[in-house]
Image 1 (cartoon, rainbow, N blue to C red):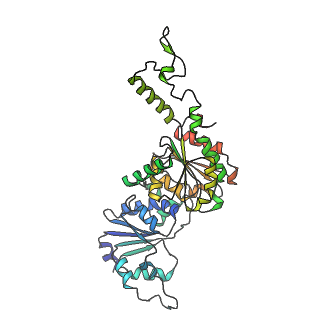
Image 2: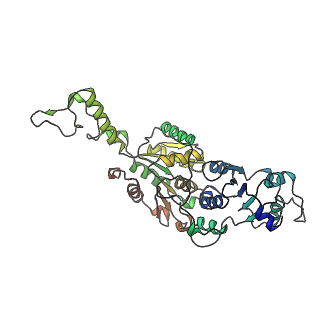
Image 3: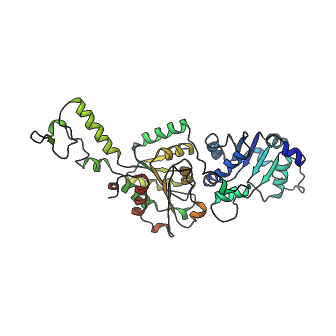
Length: 386
């Protein structure tokens, strides 16, 4: 196809091939949005790890996901013993890649034979970009530069939008864990690299600091709903004794008003839940001993939806922290050896607020410091620090 013919070709389907993990994909989202704007009206499709392709489809600008482990991709790599870049492309690869009008590949960009075979599998324009682009600043800006987009002119970071089904699954998971949904603070304690992890016992101490047990709640006389008939009422002053909720009459209307006030006071307290992925299951006994509710075996869309409805989250430099931020959550991200200027989660628009707390060694950060930032972010009453 000549350059003129290629320029005139109508762009109906665009494929982005990306081999990264969850955090990498969240950092690619501004570039995906830029590609969508560049090819307005086209279907932007993502070929990535299957769970990530499914996560992005319908919740971002991505319309459809494909597995990077598909047979059609494997057929683009020259078989052992092949001596030429001109090895014929398998018809399966040709049928799949030939249906796209533009392809951006962040996969195997340094593999000469892969590049040649992918280009031969389609008549569309194909461009190759490094999976981890060089340059200063955040990696999201580097991805934008890689596809020749001016990051300074790019709009605010796009948000991942949980679906109605995601939000329903999140509500079910929260209810099943028996943690409160009001003022919910979610903890993501792990990452794929042990060197980036804050100690699990400090996370457990933080959870205890941020949450109040039922015993602590009901030990506070100002929070316990005093029986109506036991309340003392001063007829002379027309005032009720301190410690009651302000309703002396033993009638249904007063009871409802008092119950509503009690629920309001209780709702001002924080509830905490810990979400464990497959890599964090060894931490489970530590959190079990602390009594904090645990949520396990959740898919990524449900995790994103829980982050969206939570008041705040706490995590480390991990893919799930990037996911929570992309879903619009506010939170504290604890960094150790990695550079937040390059890898911090980005809050989309004005809704989310991300505070970074960095120190190396990471275990020198104390729970009180993290709790103080949570209070700053979500406005939970300072009584949670006790």
